[in-house]
Amino acid sequence: MNLPANFPLKKVMITVVSVVIVIALIITGVTVAVNGKAANATVDVEQVSNISTQYWGDQSSTYGNATSDFVQELYPDKEKAISKIFVKEGDTVKIGDTLLQYDTTKLQLKVESKELEEKKKKYELEQAEKELTKLQNTAPYVAPVIPEPEPEPTPTPVPESQAELYTEITEHSKPFKGAGTKEDPYVFLCTEDAVLTKGFLLKLLGVTDPRATPTPTPTPTPSAEPTAQPSEVPTAAPQPTVTPEPTAEPTTAPTEAPTPAPIEPTEAPTPAPIEPTEAPTVSGMAWFKQMTFTKTNETGGESVPTPEPDFTLPDGPFVARFEVHEQDNENLPLVKGWQMDGDKISAGFFNEVISEPDDIQMPDLSYADPGISYDTGGSMYTAEELQQMIADKKQQIQDLKLNVKQAAHDLEKAKLDLENATIKSTVNGVVKSLTDLDTAMSTSSPFLVVSGGDGFYITASLNESLLGKVHVGDTVMASSWENGQMYEAEIVQISDFPNDNSNYYYDGSSNPNSSTYQFTARIADADGLKNGMGLDITLKAASDNASNAIYLFKAYIRSDDGGKYVLKVGDDNRVHKTYIKTGKTIYNQYLEIKSDTLTEEDYVAFPYGTSAIDGAKANGTEENTDENGGIDARGLDA
Image (cartoon, rainbow, N blue to C red; front, side, top):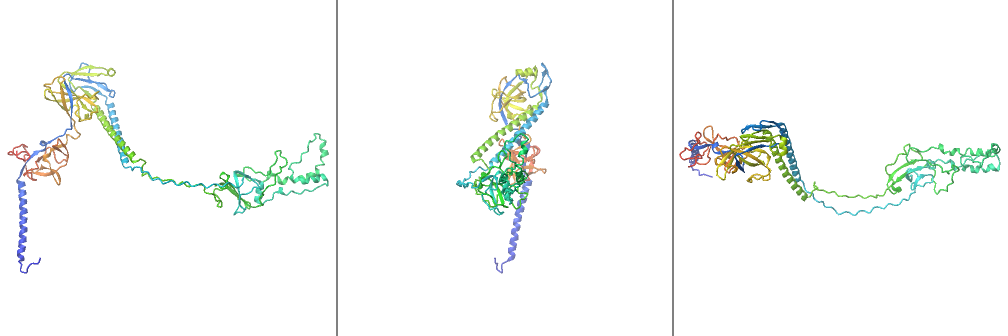
């Protein structure tokens, strides 16, 4: 802002400085006052042990009867082997005297077996929980949208075969196509066992068959009889004509010898060029199983005349291809084939043709099935099936949890059997009977009985869930409805075997379907008790960490933004704010102290009231009594 020219600036500065000084003096005064108050304040403190308690576990109630003549009975156990018995019948024993010793080797093996069984049950539970997680993360099956099926295409009809099928290819075999050139060879439809004749091969190679043109023969003698023979010589068989009915006498042979003499020169050159045995044959291929050159009669005589052929291949050389097709139809796919060139026959012409020739166009007789690809979302189970599987798996997990608990209970019992391998007397009395184990086993009776006659005992039952938490030597409280008195008793025996029935009082704090075990407790001060009197019994089941934890009275705990704290007395004998960690609440009044910043020997102040100031002097750290002029230990008016 703009101040007038004659405005006294010096006065403004003085005013600002004065205000600052006043504020500083006020803050200093407040601080001094507070510190002075804290320095002069005195707050009463209390030792933690006086305002805390210990938690020994939950209580369980049962019902029993008082008896003045207690009998200790030991029954044979098939799972235990007795190593030594220390008493005999008639001996006087006291509570705590050793009666017998079981073999610990077998008991130790039983403990190890139960440990393995417990691990197995835990593993089964872990696997079931993993399977449940997998099921819960599985997406359900989603039915795919199936498209409308397309109509099946009409298959292409297969044309009938127009080619002649050959099992033997001769010079008169007619190809179903081709011109005999390299570009367009003759094509023959064959069977797989087809053969090639000599006549065909000669045509293929362009070689003239000597049988087609007979060789002329000279006539040595101008007679009518021998001249008639040469016209028939070319068609005659290679063997000489057999004379009918030859004479057995040797004299006839020379008389007839001059007759065939002029024929011999005409017949001799005829068989030589057509001798088939020395002709080259094709071999080395499965297709050539045999070679047929000339058909002869069964008697081996002259050749059988054949009808005039309708077709004869031209003289070569030419190129021919031989094909085998499916169903012997040239319109269907090629199975195998080979090709021969009369100009030059390759040494490898016997190789089979695996692929179809380029010039053969086979009709497409197949049609593709489009098929359908389904996306099931990674699961083959529907939502309903998954829900049922998850429910079943949860039930299985519940059963497995019970199995784990049972295995843990069996293990605990086996450990107790090992710990209690030495059996001691639970009564002051006399060994009434001692029989052999076989007799006791057969009669289901005790093999050792100790009868006591002093004091009173309580016989009651406890739930199997308390095994391992209630021990021999623990104290129980019993109350009588008849005389209204309370009695303290010490447990002297817990049975190793469950009761045959559960006709005992049940308070609802444990599972009614579980087994119960009988226990016996001895009452030291039994004034007012009668034999058979009924008693209500309270047992304390110790928890795992019960005796070590501190449970502080809630009133001594306060909280702020930093958490829960107590006003704890320090080494300077003044209380200081100390933050703590807390746990569960018991009896609705005590809170568990989980941090190690507080012990039963420490002192704390009640954190409410005018004197409950951080830094206040502690009062009462020595006497811990209410001697502060009517002010109680919490700093409140009495």
